[in-house]
Length: 60
Image 1 (cartoon, rainbow, N blue to C red):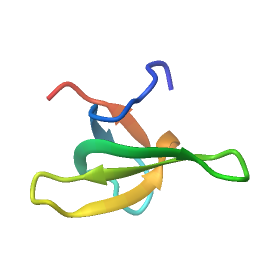
Image 2: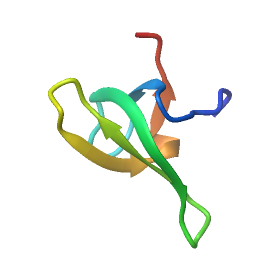
Image 3: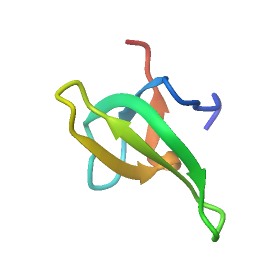
């Protein structure tokens, strides 16, 4: 990941279960095993968790 994501960034999911969805990054956390997880809030209010490696920062 070239650009570091931060809370409030708009992102698009490029891999995994939620591939193709996009929304606002919330709740960045690092797990005990070292993976960075985020919650993504979509425009319709639905939120989901995914790994940071599965998303790209996206210009809205």
